[in-house]
Structure formats: structure tokens, C-alpha cells
Amino acid sequence: MVTTQRRAERARQVADGLRQRIVAGEVGDLLPGERALGEWFGASRNVVREALGLLRDEGLVERRQGVGTLVVRPKYGHGLDRLTGLAEALEGHGEVVNEVRAAETVAAPPSVAERLGLAAGEEVVHLERVRRLGGAPLSLDSTYLVADLGIALLGKDLAHRDLFALLEETNGIRLGRAEVEVHAVSAGPDTAALLDIAPGTAVFALDRLTRLPDGRPVDAEWLHIRADRLTLRATLQRGAA
Image (cartoon, rainbow, N blue to C red; front, top):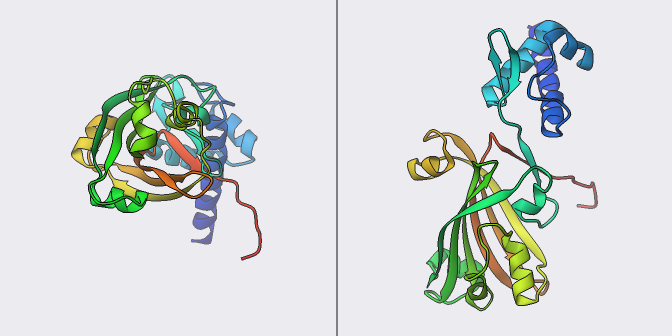
């Protein structure tokens, strides 16, 4: 039992290390053989096989008879320790294109009004976008902006520009900070169809409230992110409690 547990733990370590290399672009579409991978990580072939099995379960690699182990689709990293838009975070990985499904003024739903500090039913700007990289969907974003800042964006290039940059440029402001919560949820039928995944697939649900430097909330967002395409990460510093 101890040996089995140790091998499983070692396989997870190898899978983590190989995943990092894939995300960083340090390996090509075809992975080296099991022997070479074992030499990379100082692990036995049995451990390497288990590690590859873990990555197959994630949908990151697949085994093809007569070819080898292929990277199916690399995961991209999106840091949570800086306030950046998706296109900014993925710069260098390809063009992020937004399928704009909604761009309109609406009466703020109660939950939105509460988050933005508005009166119930007050006018806000609602944007809904499917974010794509390399033609494949990454996330479904539903955004609500305070009207005095959001209305000016309705005529802008929402298909190719990050919202944060547009907010700042168009209104001559600087964004200050954001509060973020991340949950794991199962994609419903509508969300799954837009993200090109099976209903019930686990996705990241990210809630973000962005504020100006003076603390005023101006942007409430709800994002559903494909967990097989994007890794959320942060660098944390140990400090006083």
C-alpha cells in the first residue's frame, strides 16, 4: 500500500512538471517517449505511464497508435495577482477574438445593482461575449458596467479589444483593483453549447468586481472558463496575518 501511494504521488509530481512544460511551450505537439520522459524527471516508466494517464484524463494529451503521445491542446495561464484582461494575459499565444452576443443598455438586475451600489432598476450596460483563442472558445463572459462609463464603449471594437483597456482609454480613467472569487461548477446546456463542451463538464466560474482607485465599483463580471484550456494561477507572498 505504501509503495502504491508513493508511486501515485510521484506520478502526480511528474504530471505537474510535464503540464508546466507543456503550458510554457517547452515541448512540441509530440511528447518524447516514456524512457526519455523518465530521464527528464528521474522517474520509472511505470510512474511516467501513470502521469500520462492523469494528463489524458484532463484532456491535455492523447495516445495515438503508431504515433505516440500528442499534446491535444495546451493550457494557457491567467494570473490572478494582477488586474489584466484575457487578451493582455495571453499576449504572445495568439489573437483573442470576442464573439459579441450582447451589447446594450438594460435595467440593472437586483444582484447587479447591489454589487455596483446602484438603485434597483438603474440603467447599466450589459455585454456578453464568447472569448476565443485560435478559433476555439475559452470563456463565456457576462459583464455589467455603470452607465456613465459603459455607454461610451458600445460603439467601440468589442470584438478585438480587452474591456479594461477600452474602459481606461475611452473614459480617461485608471482602474484600481478587483475582488475575485473562483468556484468550480458544472456547465449547463446553454453554456456548454457556447463553450463547445459536453453539458455537465466542470468549468471555472469566476466572479469579479472591478473598482476605480477611489473604491467605486464600476464593472461586475461573471465568467465561465473552460478548465481544460485555461489555468488560473497566482504568486502569493507570505506576510503578516
